[in-house]
Image (cartoon, rainbow, N blue to C red; front, side, top):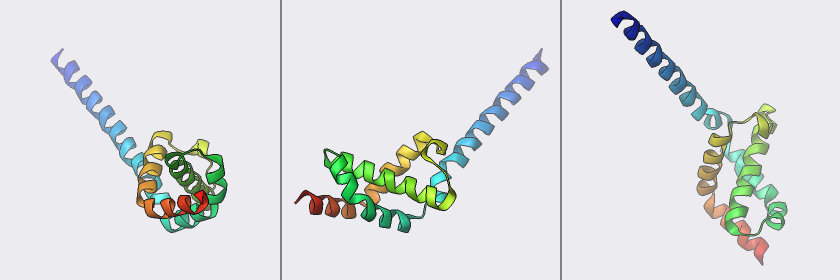
Length: 113
């Protein structure tokens, strides 16, 4: 009985490690694949269209960055949005939008005039 519990505990630990490793590998998905220089250029390229499709600065900031990140991944790796890990994409897009805050804010102000 004790040996059985030990084996089950060991299997549970292995299972946890595998799922943790999957999370760790997945968490690097965007960082390994996205060229931030390309994203910045795509942000500038898509700003006009996204401005007229959004209703607030926060929506503009997120949607513009999302479009740029997805376009960069598609161009470089042939992946579509449905191929991407959704939760990590949201987190990465939010971080990237904050990284390019000044550029995005300047574009928003330009189109707002």
